[in-house]
Image (cartoon, rainbow, N blue to C red):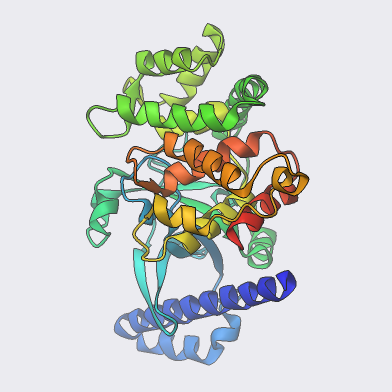
Length: 381
């Protein structure tokens, strides 16, 4: 049964990708007709079978992934598929949307253009092939994209997280192009070492209390954000760490702050701060968290009523229920109580809050498949 469902998911994902590729190619050819009719005739003869190699196009699949950067949880689970064109270093992102069982639309989310990093060490530098890998963030200025949904444009900085990538196309393109390391690459490597050291210290402290601390920590930071722009200053973060008894030495804190406050503004996005010092699940684990959330979010609103979660959560196969130490109702009530502690609203859960819960749970689970099993069993995914 599990294998059958998994096979169906693979087929469905391939169909989505093919649908988007066809639309991108159609749009690309339409522009070619306007600019150069002869060029279009040549491209048409190549056909879609050569879209990955002859067109030098590396398909990259990534979603908008957010914790607290947007109040609209729906944006965190948008179906986005992007393409990087190596011949001119441009990229485009399309959104795949499904209505009911048969109706679908594919529309540009980010128009084809040459873009540059808008955040971090590489701010202002043009995107290159080496910038595309699973877990990478692509940043854009919301003001540059007037057709974006209003909930997305609320944020000055739009962040897209790459969750999957066409490795065959990527490896083929990497064979043909070599990008030398630069000083920024070395700086980024040092930044990762600084943050990894802090993450290791905090994970020891969070090992047996990760869920309650992380859910509460995220909610506390959100409440401190009086301006509602997702930014807090150094004193705010120090206070939050103290409240939740998360011990970070002064030297480590200052090292992390110099990495995160690279623009010198004195304020840092609190979602970014939390992920930087505590770390986060890998994208494989996150894919199942999103899958569970999207199954529960029947109306695709980005938030789930607590009453629906209660109806759908199944504790029959929970180890404590099987052993007879707890009843199904006790396990369900304990789960809901902890989850509700993370919520800014008492009657519903946003995607960010849902992910926070499983982020905390993930800390104490080393094996990826063991974590996935914990998600599959109660939610039936």
